[in-house]
Amino acid sequence: MCADLVPDDLWERVAPLLPPTPERRRRYPGRLRVPDRVALAGVMYVLRTGVAWRDVPAETVGCSGVTAWRRLRDWTEAGVWPRLHGALLTELRRADLLDPDDCSVDGSHVRALKGGIMSALHPSTVPARAPSTT
Image (cartoon, rainbow, N blue to C red; front, side, top):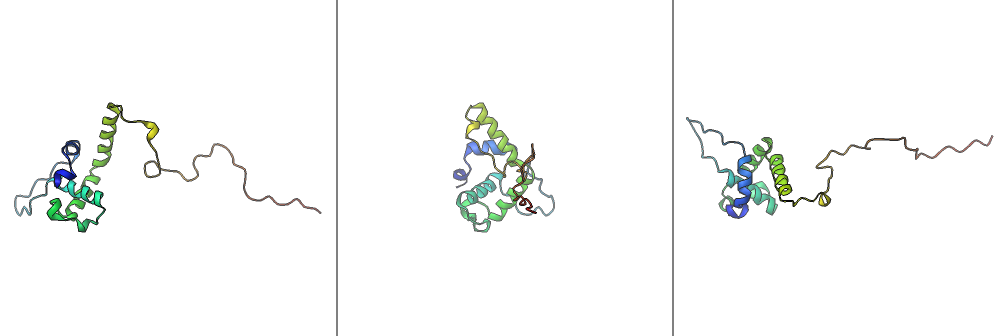
């Protein structure tokens, strides 16, 4: 199942961007760490199926949903996803497959300022007072 969720070509792109695995404690080392590829498979499983983290089938994926969520949190804090995005964009540009005419930008990508930048005064939309007849 791991190979289905994380194909080799995806893993080859992601693996160099992941932070190094922390050293195990010598005394009381605890459980063995789940491999990064298995944790990424758990993340991909949630993204593809839309299930809750607690509902990830550990027997199928290879790790619990909580483990996958923790690893996702650690990778997000380490800045893995913006670096992966940049690497994929670079690869698409080199292959001449990136067409700027087919892209869109919204508030989730670029901060949208309320009201924008005012270049000129705008006429008021408030109704004007009627001229006095006296």
